[in-house]
Image (cartoon, rainbow, N blue to C red; front, side, top):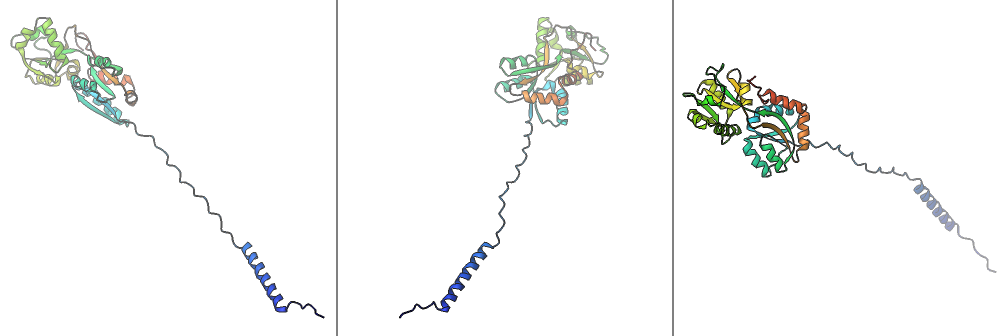
Length: 281
């Protein structure tokens, strides 16, 4: 008779040991420390965008209007406005604008603003003063001069603006021809100048007896000279601050910086650009 034998004790022990090892491994894997989650990368805060600086305001200014525009620009710059000014004769600035040179404003006297308008470049104009020819002579007017006919007196030394460069000179020559005074005055003319200030200086130092200049040069020179209006009629000549096409924003910034259009006009009037009253002032 054959009987089944029991598993040997060593095999049972081996199996038990394997079970214990397996159970321990599973338990250790389950109990292992879990590393903390890695936080997602946070993008740096976006830099606050600063508004771009206002563009430079560009002005083309006739040389006759330099003094008041320098005052306007100084005031605008004191308020932080960037301004660039280019000075020249109105008759030389106009062709540059017509040729396409960029500017925000142009400060010109008649007839040049009308020419800008005809070319489609003028957006708006601020009239800031009038121009009139005035007679300048020594303080007290010792020679008793009062009109153009007096400039033909024998022995008188006269200075006139050069009609090739000066609108005042151009108007004056046309008036002398119209009044049949050109031939009588011509021999008395000892100097013709492009700059009116030089004529006033010549009267002041006594190198000439009389000169004809714009009112904005004559009036501020008092009392070192006598300045009298010349009887008209004269062509109406207005000085205008012209806003050019594309310069609307810059014009607005400049006007706001200096305190408004009335303040610009006041600065021009303070520099002799108001029309002369009858019999002088």
